[in-house]
Length: 420
Image 1 (cartoon, rainbow, N blue to C red):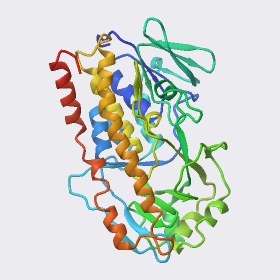
Image 2: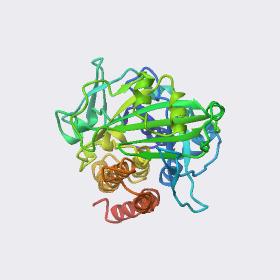
Image 3: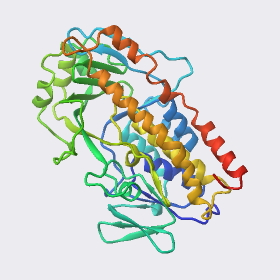
């Protein structure tokens, strides 16, 4: 192992937790992952990663591993085509790309399949649901788990998701854990593309589509080599937020009729698609709100949804988590980073990440309002208005030079003798 005089614990073994742990272990830095579930697991849904997320994975040194499991095993940027939900699904907008832009659509479990085998089992610990984080008199941190066991480390990386326990340590106690419900539910499912074509769907399903309408939208894109269609159908009751839902936020199986009825006034193709989802799951969208000003307290640092859970309307939340992991990785592997200057180094992370992720959170909300504000009646946007607002909306997310930003901060920090 590399000569680092501090110990690291990652709380949470989801996509972001595994990404940072894999990168650190490969760099020779001993890192232990504590996961609440009995094994590494992800709910079967697809994710779309833009050029910024791809760059972060490349910087972490795990992109080739992920691509080796992807189908097809190569980068292919496929932005959304926007169509109407009602009627004959008329074309609204295509997002313009240059030839060198690279992205990736991948099934979440496949991402884990790519990284889990890389990590030696001695660094992974399961059935460890964190219930508290505290500080010892010596300045170390203790994570206590639900089974009354605990672990002590110099650095705690909180990758424990939207219902994060580590967030409570960093941001302070809050009756709702700093979360709000956005009054939107998303129905999810996977269906056979060949079966949909056989059943009469005319729309080209081999490219990502955003079906727009008033207070609801549907996202579809192909995975597994255009074999399956990943479907997310979102319905909003309002554009306000409210306290977190008391019911289960994720229902693994809900009546298909509930989902289908929400789209009873939409066009033929979308109805056929939804009719093929026999056992949809339903996700109640929650976000960290208001956005956190800081992701670091002492030597506890938040990444991913623990720091900035956001609405998925820009398909950018996971990508921001990978950016978190990349920045933290770069800071920690620097040869001059040590226990002595660790808190100062983490302040660099806290300078870089909150403003950037908060911007993406804000733009994701704006995109959602655009999705759900299309169509006649109730002040809905026209096609022209929608086109104008969609133009360039992903540019600030996709084209930020994060590597350069980290380089500048590190060079400034260490050229001033390790002082901010």
